[in-house]
Length: 134
Ligand SMILES: [Zn+2]
Image (cartoon, rainbow, N blue to C red; front, side, top):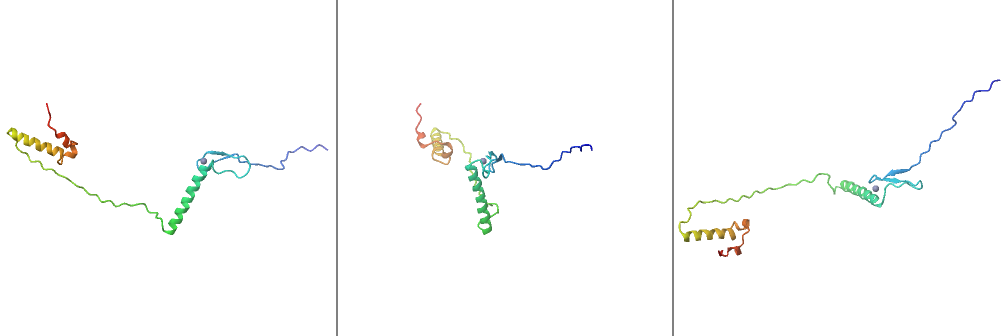
């Protein structure tokens, strides 16, 4: 009787998986796993705390919306626009023809530039009014 041919049969197969590392649920940094205990979801306490803050804020918002104390509508504003115009009428006058007329004319100009309506825009103060000495 001839020997029977050998046939290699696979009786069983076993595949095992082992977690080596995962990414932080908040920042995505890789968090190694030691193989013991529950794997960590976050790389550190700050990521854990931030995640908890967001989750608890979302829960509070949903609760407030359900209770009607928070709105889901966007903020709307009503704005009133007021335009104020100021006009100045300039009347052309003939220049003074005498020295006293020029002195009075120039003094009025100095008054307008130092204490009058134009003073704020010029920055000239009344102390600048001292007569000039050559
Ligand atoms: Zn993290």
